Image 1 (cartoon, rainbow, N blue to C red):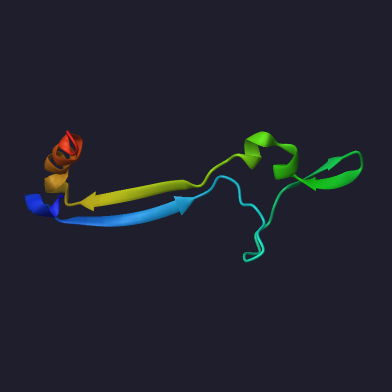
Image 2 (image 1 turned 180 degrees about the horizontal axis):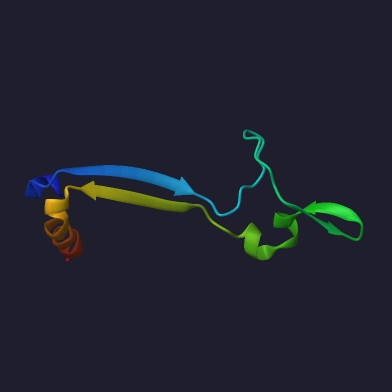
Length: 79
């Protein structure tokens, strides 16, 4: 879309999560809480943490001289 308007652009995809859950494939740490003298994963005790979703972002980089033009193209995209 930006290339069609002769705007150089670099796209960087990023995913992130506010909270890292343990998984079988990855050895990530999870926060534990003590309840009734026993440790439990925070995700088990907190529905807020349990329902957190991964954040998906796409960052677009353009040359400083093309910034205004790129914003206008993206703003009008899909109209």
